[in-house]
Figure 1 (spheres, one colour):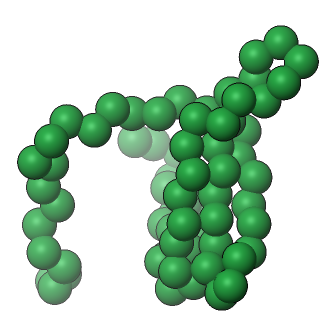
Figure 2: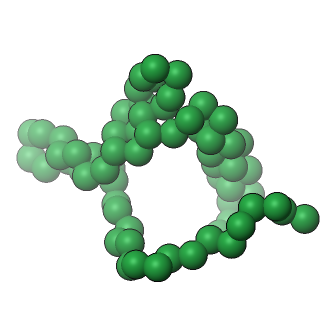
Length: 71
């Protein structure tokens, strides 16, 4: 059983599509910078800063999701 509180969406948050992501390490946190390619430039569409523990959990969950090969 998971002790996390339920995930709610009190306002509508739009999905962001990205064609690439840069990863930076800043002051013990991980910064993800997502972009889309437009002509000869990459346009930033989102930045996400994660504490180390959250970034590690994301990495673990991504590995599981990609290994399963399904939705």
